[in-house]
Length: 84
Image 1: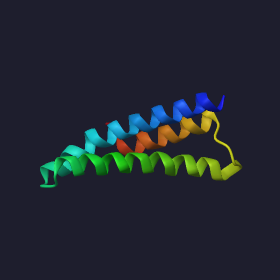
Image 2: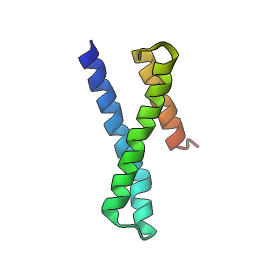
Image 3: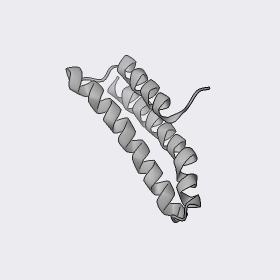
């Protein structure tokens, strides 16, 4: 069971990294920052966002359920996208 949850967390983390790189990594490179540094920083921010959301869920009761994982992912999506 824990291995399955770890895979889901890893998958959500990779998806968040891709989201951050595609939205902010290229933009900061256009502003003059080196491309590799921009992409690395965007990836790091993505990892930290996932860690922050999962930490909030874990602090409540000492465990992370699939529902909490889904809730955390929804909050990350809401923070990083603007629906019109």
